[in-house]
Each structure stands twice: as C-alpha cells, then as structure tokens.
Image (cartoon, rainbow, N blue to C red; front, side):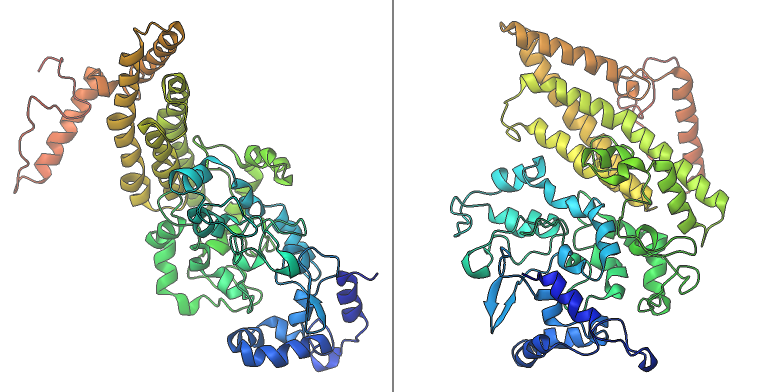
Length: 501
C-alpha cells in the first residue's frame, strides 16, 4: 500500500510548477483533500484558517492534508470526513519537505529534552510537589498534574494514544520541544514555529525562546533582556527586519542580535542550523560545567565528534559582525575564568561534599534539607551565574548568581555538613563513623584551601592588609558621608583578626 509520505511526494511531483508565474515550490494548486478541510475549518476554526493564510505554506499550496495526512496503519491515524489523518504533526511529517532542518534538529539536544522524564527534576514534580491524582484512560495509575502542566510542556511528554486516534489529556495538548511521538520521532517543530502560521520571524523573536528558557534555574530570557544585546533589540525592534527570508546578520539587520542570531541563524559564512549546540563552548547545565561534546556523547549525538574549539569558532564568527577580534577574545577569556572560578571554588567541592554526605543522610531523595540546599546551589544559583556571564548580564553573574551561590554554600551547606559530622563521628556504627570522618577530612581540606580559608579567619596577613587599604580608599571617596566604623568584633571578610595592627 502506498504510504502517506509517498502519496504526498507523488502529489507534489506529479504537478508541474509554473516558474514563469512565480509560483512557489509545492503543488500547482491546493489539493482536493485540503479544499475539503478548508471549507469546514474556515467556518469552525477561522483563526487557524487565517494563520495558515498568512503563512508561506499558503503561498506554496501546502495545506491541511499535506501536513495531517496519515496511513491507516499509523498508531495515531483515524478517519475524519472520509480522510485518514492524524492530529499530531511530528518532525517525521515535517521532514517530507524540510528534511535538512529535521535532520539538524534531531541531532540537537533540543530534540532530546523529553529524555528528562524520570530524572531528578521530575522527582520534584512527580513526588515532592505532586501525587497520582490525575487519572485518565491512558494513565490509569495516575500522574502528577504538576508534571503535566509544568515539566512536560517545555521538555515534552511521551504521547499516549487512545482508540480512534484520540490522545490522552495527560499528554495533549503538548508542544514540548522534546516530545516523544507515536511514530518514534522526538521533538515538536511547533515549539518554535507555532502552528498554523509556522513563522520564521516568530522563531527569531526572543520571547519565543522565553517560553522555556526563563525562571530561577535557567533565566536566559531575563538575562538577555537585561544585557546590552537585549536593550539594543527592544530599542530597535522596527529595524530588525525579522520577516526577511534571508535574514543574515550584518546584511539584513545590524542593530542587535536575538537568541536565534547567535545560536541558529545565518551569517555571512554559516548557514542556518537547527542544532542549537553547534556554537556553544560550555555546557552549563550540570553541577560542574563541562564541554558540550562530552554532554553530547552521553546522549549518543553526532555532536560528540565536534570539539568545543570548533563551536567557539562558529560563535566567534557571529560575534565579529558587531565586535572586533580583541573584544571577542577578551570576552571569552573572562567567560572561561568565570567558569573556572565556579567549578573549582563551589561546583567541584560541593559535588564531592554532597556525595560524601550521602551515607549519613536519609536515603529518600529530597527528604533532607541538604538535598534542597545543594540542588538549589548548582541547579538554580550556579546556573544563573554561569548563564549570566555567558550572555553578559552582570547582575545575574553576581547578585542573582555567585552571591547566592556563596551565601548558600557558607550559611547553609557548610553548617549542614558540620552538623552531620558532629552527629555521626562518634557513632557506634563503624560505617557511619568512618563516613563522618571522611566527610570531615574533605570539608577541612576545602575550607583550608586558598579559596575558602577566609571563612576560618586564616586570610594571609598581606591579603588582609590589602583589603583594609582598599576599604580605607573606598571611605576616602565618600568623605562627605563617612561610613560607620567597622566593629572590631566583626572584622571585614578577608581581614585577619589575629594579625598585629
């Protein structure tokens, strides 16, 4: 039996294209099947009809049936007014015409976002926040409504089908970018190209990315808006030429970059890519930042073969449309130094200490205060700091970032670790006593390191003197309203209370 894909291909190839009339690629005219759809939906879904009418699909005579057609044997197929169709339009369907884009997208981490299902993040929404109260035909055992309306709407759900081509309400509507589809494909093109307009201009607009890339753990939208890039964009929206089909930075627009500019869109030397990781030289998602090829290898992605140096060159070629090479090189030097600071001072040591604390804690995940403390340190504050620096938003690097990291580490994590040690170092259980001793040894090593010894009042005298001089210079600049004297009982951070005056 002829497959749905073959039917569409035959429909397109069998109809001659009248180049002289300027006809776009696609069928010579709207198919009879689609005409039937349009006649009905023009009345019952007028907004969808108008969105399609404003799209490039309309100009190419690609309409309802060309996207929604299905084979009788497809798991999501059903009969509708004499046609075999499916509600879901998956990347596999889009690949009928957009094979290159789908191939790139499938190779990206975006398409794998649904693999978060069952992860530590989902444990929070499924168990800590939720319950099994949302019960449906497709989910008779129940599922957390927090997961359905939260995690899955960005990351994507595993679509559950019901008889007759219907979709279980726990997994539809869902346009999560890593949606796991019944045809085996991963992803949802309309996560960015919202149906039924499928607008490239909308995908280029920063707010489109902001559906998912915002909030306490990955606030790229807010970071962008508070950066000079974002300020320039919003001041020059009318000059951004977002509707231009070519949209090459430096040629079609020059006032500001958007998320798409840096991560996906065409430059004078690079074509458009739907693999958003090919210009990223650090993966800042984990507890400790790693290179993107290492992260891609874990998912079996072809990006495992593309070193970070190549990706940085790709991004640099974007940057030099507006900045000179020294500016770009110095920015990356700053960025790398910041990642090194976070990794070595907090990320790496924190990860070690949390692992050593595990034998002394309640084994149920998120039943301990320390579980939340460490999770928020790296997953929230740590990511904010690293993302803030990567996109040049200093308030997110500092106040929303490293300040919060340091505060949580010194005022919550360290005291919790010390309490665990005190509780267990004298335990009658040799295993717990040994675990407490191992934790104490590592904590002492961390706190006595150059990065943390200020916390113990062990700052080098020369450093303490330097800090005091800087404080006095600061006060001298504000002599008109002198600062209150520092209490000798509470020395400045970095001061050495044991040093001679």
